[in-house]
Image (tube, rainbow, N blue to C red; front, side, top):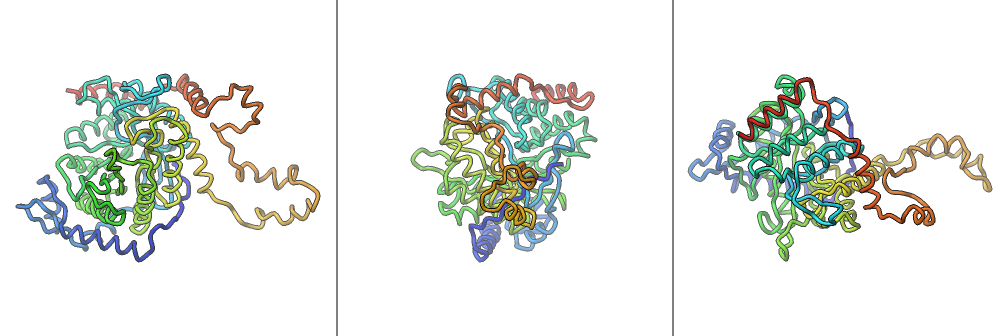
Length: 478
């Protein structure tokens, strides 16, 4: 099992303001409450003690129900991979990084220097690369299977991921029928339903509708909870469009939506694991596009992480996503801002590594570069040890005023874990760099991608799983 890097504890909100946002969220759950187009959710919340106005289809949740749900929700649990060595211990104080996001409509083609329509082969390549990279802890879609009929893409994407990574992934909750079919595919790839229930692989992504709505598309949450899959409950409000333009207002609304999700999950099955994904996405009104790399969005996510620490809940949000269109310095600056601030603030799971253009497409080269940046952030999170040995007073006195520390045993004992050694970024003299072709880091990343994919193949599934997964894919497509 992976235990992640130690999370930071950056505070962008005072203790008093954390409490004010919490109280504001509780107030929103009571007035105006949550609108539900789902009769199932109206029934569940009514049985659980909420005040349900069936004529208006509005659920008013009292503070006591929130408090009860917070006590029931586990604060530490496992997100499973195909094998135990890929499992993630998910709890506050640990940090993980994930490739990609939800199925994306394009794919960045290095040879063309621009995005194009993707194929299932691109989904396979992105998944295999994410499987190989050491700092990628969970895997999501780098593009989509754009060469199959539009209504079949979701199932082919799931098939490509399940066959090519052993790391935890996600299940999108998009209606009960599709969710159930996806669960059957994951069960097949896990070696059967019994094995899947014993180790319910991945996370189930449920997206509420801002402002303050849930729909029938979310009803598949009942099925994923039945199988024991942790629920990744999130939303996608946009500043000034589907939530207030102020970060404080957006955070209050977003937390209210996710607190409702927590209550819903605990009413369905007390003690079911939940990961929070409240968001404060910023929309640029001049181009009507979500600003993945904006400072205000990064600040909002840091505040969200602080609210997660207040509640003791593990959190999930975008960390490596960018607005840049190419895997260039623009992309690297935005990605590092998001990844570093997320980690210092304590976000448990940061996704979107390797994606470009506000999540429109993934780039294999940028995923390779993002893996190296995650490597750097992990070194920062590991901090510095201060003790008698690391202070090194004895060796300082031994070397004196005119010696050096290069051959000292103290140096040999500590340098490997004190110093950062890049795996992709090259440290070299100018002369050596020129003699080797003066390649840019994107060229170096592309070369490394090709080397990895030349030897990568599908993962080994449990006995009989390959044929069973193929059968479940055919059934889902029908």
